[in-house]
Image 1 (cartoon, rainbow, N blue to C red):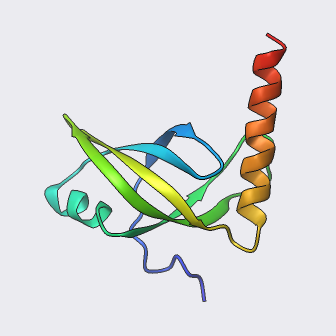
Image 2 (tube, rainbow, N blue to C red):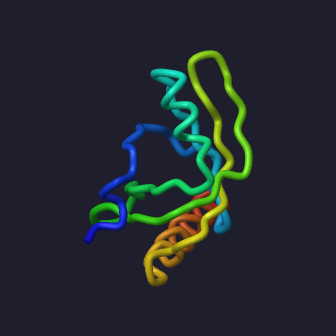
Length: 103
């Protein structure tokens, strides 16, 4: 069974990312959606440049801040899908660090 089958689908943008967590900004469509986002654990499916397909993982919401029609959510990564996510995120961060060093 897909561990994400019961998860609500919400579109957003990861604005800041580290090996341990991220800041994700999402548009709010309703008050019910905002309440659903503030549950303790959230499921993610996302793509990273240079990777094939989507990576899925779980995160724990640590804080949130509503901004007009958006909500910024601080998330701590809690499940890395058998190491797959941690490998992808580490490679992505190293790529960004190497590119910024060479600029």
